[in-house]
Length: 528
Image 1 (cartoon, rainbow, N blue to C red):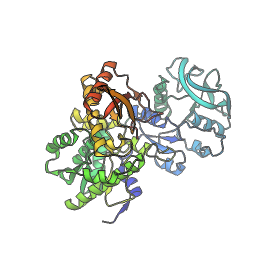
Image 2: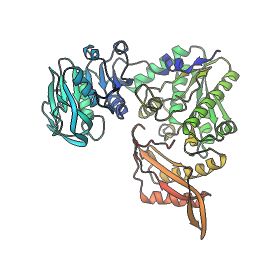
Image 3: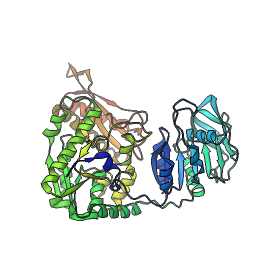
Image 4: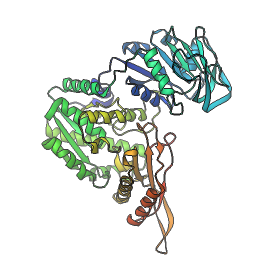
């Protein structure tokens, strides 16, 4: 088989489920909150995708969209090079909600007045509702919202009604119900606007006529049909890590094509303590002779030797994974497809259109430019909580469904600097202690993730009346609903004390433990 362009594969029909009848698009103008807008829309059981702000109007028309949301953005609408939108978008007959920058663009293009604010509004702000007949239906006339802007709309365009204001923003919300156009200066998608989900649901139901038909039951049904039709009689290999994403992908593909699926578990030497044995035991009964387990530790560590750049690590690991899968596919014969558990946050963080590259996920931007297998990515448009619901629908055990996320590159991106066997062993032991104590404290299901990080940092200590100069271990524990935003977990001091004491006493070469209290954003959950 000749090599195929990765870009062609990623836009093939099998990369995502068939789009539902009800779909809303979020046009991204570089906002830090675009993913949250999509999450709030999905929570209302309406399918949503984030698209670049410059998506051609013909493409938007062809999607049969029920609505469009124009996101916020970091720039002024008058700034040179600022992201723009075609004025014709407001004549498509598709209801549009502009948020912050999106509202300012709408106002400017339709004849309103936008100017730089004399007083920048940032944070919690009192909002006065002037008209409660559309998006504010059923809400209090006095509300608290989250503002983050410099420019503001001074005068609404002709035909628009000003529906809310603040002390510093004369047009905090506006609407033209006849044209289905709405704008809000604040951010309804963030938790700091506690009633924001109600406003978004009003736009979806009243403005767009959505009924909320997007469910995981329909997703599972449609996806199985798409996979079965697309694969035909070919064989499929699935990269199985033991995590929720790859396990759910394997279960979906298995439902569609049965024993045409071969699951390949690759121990790359970068897994947690005892994990290779746990994974093979958990999936041996389910896939029997169609589970191929292999130890490729030497191969991966050899490829990572001397590498310190995190993006390089991810690319190397992605390339090696594909090479291993292709080697095994040749042994099986007649294999045309590779299934993997890519999620929507993987795609977004790897950089799409207006969204910046946060970090290249090994299964997205880390893939080789050419490969001999076509991709099946049934979860590509799902968030983590949606993937968990799919797993539940498919009957996967809770031990898998509720397993905390673990990155594909494994401990390689938690060992900062060069990855060696010795440093991996230190981290592996420390990480096992973190998880053990988290479980004992009853916090495992309350956290999104908890793990240890081994930075390339040594410090002075005193152990047994002797000076030491050894490694520091960072403990990271966060809460989150979807992994797109996260807050550091307020773990009990007693649990942190036990973690610290055990790591220092039980892991050779460590004399200091620190706790990471950074939220996402501005930090990310993983350190690399």
